[in-house]
Length: 132
Image (cartoon, rainbow, N blue to C red; front, side, top):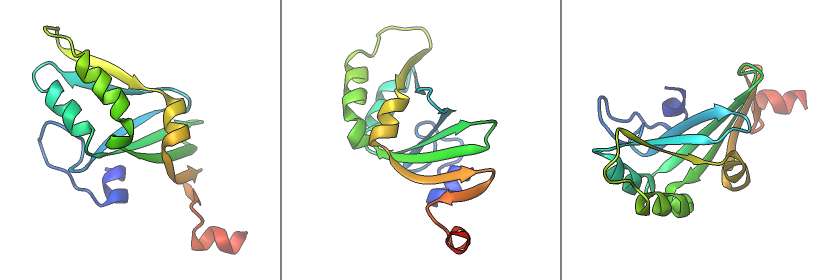
């Protein structure tokens, strides 16, 4: 819900596919990879869609006292999605699980926001400008 508010993307209720209308949302412990899961019946279509939407990556540490939010468009991650699509198992049991490395997201994702102790510290806000 937090991501939906931040990017003004309400998504679709009870719909399969990406988390919001135009964004996939992922979260992981700082330094950990971001897991993507694809269901056996809809996985190929979801992989195709992932190449065309934005991806929001939350990383958190210290019991959510520090949270970073980064953005990357699916077209920038096409190398991952194309390879995953080519290697999509057929048949397979239930879910196809793959990962985007934290290092890739940290290097290539655009840092949108940092929260420390529940306060926005990046980008600078009127409050942080007054304190600085």
